[in-house]
Every structure is written in C-alpha cells, then in structure tokens.
Amino acid sequence: MCGIAGFVGNDPATLERMLDSIVHRGPNGSGADTRAPFSVGMRRLAIIDPQHGQQPIYNAAGTISIVLNGEIYNYKELWQELQQKGYRFTTDHSDTEAVLHAYQEWGRDCVHHLIGMFAFAIHDGERGELFIARDRLGIKPLYYTSRPRFAFASEFKALFQDPSVPRQPNRDSVRQYLLYRVHDATEDTFFEGIKRLLPGHHMVVKADGTYAITRYWKPEVSPDFSSARSDDSYAEEFYDLYKKVIRRHLISDVPVGVTLSGGLDSSGVASVTAELIKQGSQVHTGNQLHTFSALFPGQTIDESEYIHLMERHTNSVPHYSHPDVETFWRELDQWMWTQEEPTISSAPYAYYSVYREVAKHVRVALSGNGGDELLAGYLPYFKAYFTSAWDQNHYGALVREIVRGFRVYQGVVRTALAERNRLRGNPISMRGLVTPEIAQVKRHDYRPSRNLNERLAQDVTKYSTPNLLRYEDKNSMAFSVESRVPFLDHELVEYIFRLPIDQKIKRGWTRFVYRNAMRDHMPEPIRTRRSKVGFTNPELDWLRAKHKEISLIFSSSVFARRGLYQKGSVDRAWNEWLAGRPGDGLIFWRILCTELWMRRFIDQPVLLG
Image (cartoon, rainbow, N blue to C red; front, side, top):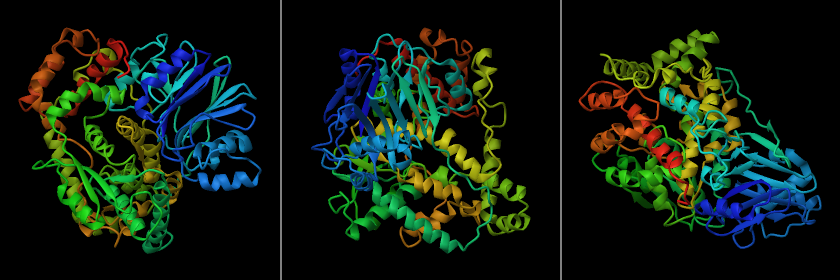
C-alpha cells in the first residue's frame, strides 16, 4: 500500500512536496523516477516484501518503471508464470514487480491478469508514455488534472502542492450532493478541473500531456429471476468461493486484523478468518485474531451485544474505540482534511476512530464493506425484487414470496408508512433552502433499474459503493493502515452478479445465499438478524448537541457569501428543525459539511496537514 503521484515534466521540488503531503499513506520510504518526459514518485507502506520491495521498480534494461498503490493477491502465481516465460525478478517476492513484468509480457492487457486492489503508473520510456490503471471496483483512488499540465495523485492534497493547479469548487458536483446526495458517481470531483479515473478504467498519457481513457472491465449481470438449482448447492458454492477470497485477502508479511461492526458482513469476514487460523492456514495474524470495533454504550446504535458475541465465537483479541461528540467536533477540521471531499453524513467518522485503534496493533485490516450493495441488504431493494418477479411473469413466485414473508413485508410496509407520516406537515427540504439556480438543477441520469441484479450492479459500480470505498481508503490511510474489502474481490463480485435474483432475496430474507452459506459458521443471532446499524454515529444527536456552534456557522457572513443558499433560510430552517419541525436532519449535515470543506480546501492555503 502506498501513495503515488506524478506529472508531465521535470520538477523535483514539486514532486517532493507532493510526496511529503501524502507521507501518511507511506511512512516506510519513498522513491522517484524523474527521467524525461515524466516525473513519477511514491510513498511506501511496506506490506509485501518489506525489505526489498522499494519503488519505483525497473525492468532489466532500466527503461520501464512502476509505482503501485495497492496489493496484488495473485502475485505468487504471476511470479511463477512469468519466470517460466523467462523474466528475472530482482526482489524477494514483490507484487509490484509482478505487475511490471506482466506489463512487459501482455502490455495494457496486463490488468486482466491481476487479482487485487490497485492504482499504478508505469513510465514506459520505450514508448515515451505513462500507463495508468485503476482496479475493477475502484478500491484504490486515482485523481488527475490537466490544468495547467497533466498530473495525477492518490489524493487531492498532493495535486495542490503545485500552486499552478487551481482550487475551485465544482458547482455542479456541489449541487448534486446538496439536492440529491449524489457524489463519487462520475469522473467529476468536487474540485473543478480535477477528475477521478473511474473504476475498471486505464489511461495512456503522452509526453505532451494528452491522454486517452479506456474501460477494461464491465461485469456481466444475469437478469434471471429463478434459481436453476437447490438453495443448498448455491450456498455451498458461495461458501467455497468466499473462503477462497478471504484466504487470499489475508496474504501479508505484516500482522492482519478485522474491523468488526457486529453486522452480518463483518461478522462473516471475522468468522472465516478465525476458521482459517484454527485450520492452520498460513495467515499473518500471529495465530490470534484481533478485532476492532466502535462502541456507544447506552445508545440506540450500540452494537455491543453482537460484537461481544462474535468475539466469543472467534476467540478474538478485541480492541475498541469510543467515538463521542466532543472529540468529533474537536477533530472535525482534521477529519475534513483527511476526507478531502464532503461526506454524505458524519457516520464515516466512526470508522476513522476505529482505524486509529487499528494502527496501534496491526497494519492491515479486513472490512465487510460492500456486502449490502452486492447482496441486497437494504430495504429499498425489496421493490426491485418485486418488480423483477412481475416483469418476468413469475406471478406464482411473487404470491408465494409475499405469503411466506408476510410478517417481514408487513414490517417493511409499516416502516415506509411511519416514515411518510413522520415527514407529513410541510417538512423541511433542501430545495427550499438553496438558491433558485441550484434548486433547478437536474439530477444526473440515475434511473434505478426495475431488475434487482441490474440495480445492484448500478449501486456497486457507480452510485453507492464508490463513496463507501472513498471513506474506507481515506479513513484507513490517515493512520497508515491498509484496509482490504474481500466482498469486492472481482471474482466474488462477478459470481454474485451471475446468481439469480431469488438468491439475493427470498422468503423475506435479504442476502439469502450468504445467510445460507454462513449457517454453522457464525452465531445464529447474527446470521438471522434483520436489523442493521454498522459503523456509524448517533449523528442527529450529535448535530443537536453542537447546535450553538453550527448556528454560528450558518449565520456567518462567510457562509452567506457562498451564493448557494437563500439568505437567512438555512438559519431559520435549522432552528425550526431543532424545535421539532419534521424533515431529514441530515440535510443540515450536508450544508455544514460543504461549508467546512470550502473553508478548509478553497479558502485556506493548502498545507501539508
């Protein structure tokens, strides 16, 4: 795991500043290749081959070099295959060197041979170009700009070490975020003129700064509703692949742990990891699983009951963080600096606190992130499930489903009605707070598919998982920790997308095949739980607790000059919400977050931290 950066041209001082700004991503060393016409560098967090894996790594002729952020889990297999083809390796077992020789052998198609998470840049002196690629699911970040010259980096703050790169808000991104909660869904970022290389894409950059981008991966999605085999056969197949994926995500030369929320997905990761340890698999955990959780004693979101149940089940060594509103408010400016773009809520701060604790004990942590989006873990997915059955004429299955899951669906309807009733009576809405210019903006082309599998693919590849992965990366790397997300292993993702729809939801159960696969592998109260909390904060309570401080921000002259909101309307609506007027309180978080982000990144000089 590392941070990478580079640009067209030769400017060692600027490259050094860029790398210094992301030292948290790689405190174990740095390196640079400044051969014309490009300057490329990295900061290294040593996970694989810590003694001999320094980057950049060069080919035998010294004409091609690579810097890589991420991990390649099949690097041993690549080593063997490439050695048989005649390639000589100079490191002990570097996964980065495997990618370099894969590029020599297969060119740009090397990405199809990689299993892992990555963003890398190859300086090909023979072709006089840069080849930059990002992994299929976008687990590792890569940002770039061509203003005033082409440059790329793992974080925005590295790009801003070049004072010629403008720092201006992308007003369209801000509008989409404020009105529709949409962000990280396209190549556009919150900064005008800076884009993200999208997941499953690579780019070729020429010496004059021109570039061409190609999409190299798009998952195949089955539209089929009904299973062709027994539920047990799907469950067995799923578990075998899931265990294989967890095993390869435990490859490391440094200690590994698991972040444990108490939910179904992180509990599955912890359970299988514990089984692998017990079976004597060679995983670098010190033969003892370390788990890391956030606790909120006495609060409605506290998951202590399930967390402690999993700790006993896995015989783990538990570690806890205890996020609180005072610490959160004190660290809010630094956390915004870490996140670099506005967040949809303050919930990711809980993960930030957990990774602070992780860094005290291990350097790699596995996460359950992505399971809900892959396996239909949220209530809104029921609608797409029903429309899938209706559109494919599975009327009998639809009736049987409603009958068998009557109690569950009764609860779903009751929840929906309660939410509608809560918002009755002229609720506060974002559209009434922003200026007419912003209120009239149309939403990006988000049209959720009526087919559940296609809807899940939309969320995994574009509308939901990308922002979760951004939070995951920024929170973990802030403390020099490598986070891994086995649910988003592309082999597992492709398998799940090929499953029929009724292996995602059936008889009122979400994540149906996963629950079946985990029978006898995790405690039943967790395997069969329907409630979901995950890593979050009591964020509405925290907003109310800091109402005085927030009121000062909303009523400030700086806030009024942004040109985003109707004068005085936010301040009035905020006070009305505090007094009990119905409405989604998280709209005030989005407003607050946008303002704090602008103060930190737009208004202030960019410092190193």
